[in-house]
Image (tube, rainbow, N blue to C red):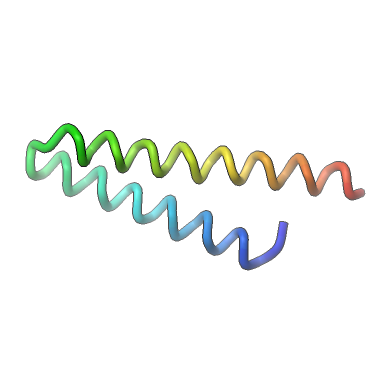
Length: 57
């Protein structure tokens, strides 16, 4: 996994966490759900990159 990909995934995860927190604070379920979806997407990308790395070895 390249450093750039790791950084992009981490930024997406942090953005999702922030969005989820804002949604909870504002009582906005849609924003909360979007934040959770962003976090899930980031986790899936990380997992995919780890699988790729495992096959490269």
